[in-house]
Image 1: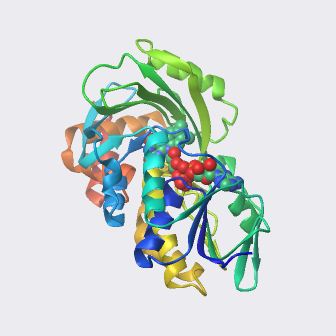
Image 2 (image 1 turned 60 degrees about the horizontal axis):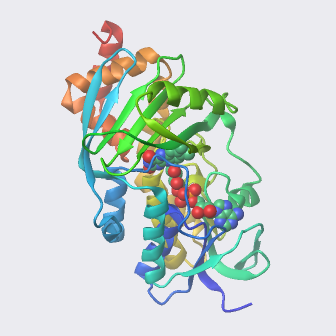
Image 3 (image 1 turned 135 degrees about the vertical axis):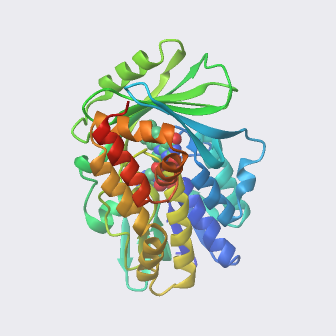
Length: 377
Ligand SMILES: Cc1cc2nc3c(=O)[nH]c(=O)nc-3n(C[C@H](O)[C@H](O)[C@H](O)COP(=O)(O)OP(=O)(O)OC[C@H]3O[C@@H](n4cnc5c(N)ncnc54)[C@H](O)[C@@H]3O)c2cc1C
């Protein structure tokens, strides 16, 4: 075996790239490895929505250059099944970037900073004394599992998968024919459980369309998702070959984020927003915190990492978990969208929680409850 890695990151998506970037920003001479089973650029099933909150984390990382030349989007339109529409300003610009491109840009930033890229499928992660051994081949002082929703590192660390009750299922595709300005648009479904369809477009090239269901019991609802997409987007020319579904591990149930010298980040740590399915922001943020902990605390990164995660996310996670429990039916969604449409303050607080790491205020909660009682009008 060669000199051990200071930090070895498994998975080179947003969480993994952010981990490598943050580690190397702290210690440019550190030996940081990024292992991914895929050759980049590679597709990733996603809505391609890079929220204002994700952009803010990229700024913290000093890597907003990965967005150079891309077209910003400054508003999100939300429509409820009862016909209310709220225009949510995202504060800072958001972006719609095919993941094939975004992830390749992030990875390029990481390797340009000095990360070593290894193309290899990880099947085995073992803690052995003061090192972690990966695939019987690589030794590292700290390993970061950033290997996504079906994380091998998580399974080896905790022997567990995400429970279905805390998993969303979403399908995305690409379609042409969506004219108009760049926009993020979502329509909530009229069924008894929360679902929404989206259209995210820069106005150039194919639009990203899709549908998400937060009903964990619908594990085999691929057909239902295809039907929902076809019904919502009758006016678009959908490229059937791009319709692909994937699970989303929601933050309403999270595994311990670290043990010993192994840390979990992004989807591997179940950090997806249970209200929206947004996960790029928390992937970038948790990846960055993990990378920093690996460098700053080479002999015990677990506790400092868990503390850092708590500091940045605990309140937000508490609020999103409570909100996800409360917004479980169509009437609650109607009331929320209607209150957002009428009251900019409610729109700002809900979007800060749904698209960033913000929290709800008592005033916003009161406005939504009042609307629920009086009806959305
Ligand atoms: C349909 C859909 C729509 C979504 N839309 C949005 C959206 O619009 N905005 C948003 O913010 N979030 C969205 N999400 C969530 C978002 O895609 C994820 O939260 C985000 O990709 C998490 O990043 P990550 O780095 O943790 O994992 P990933 O992006 O999944 O990266 C994991 C990496 O690990 C690699 N890997 C996996 N296993 C191994 C292994 N054994 N060995 C080596 N490498 C391995 C993979 O090849 C991959 O490159 C969506 C998700 C879905 C399914």
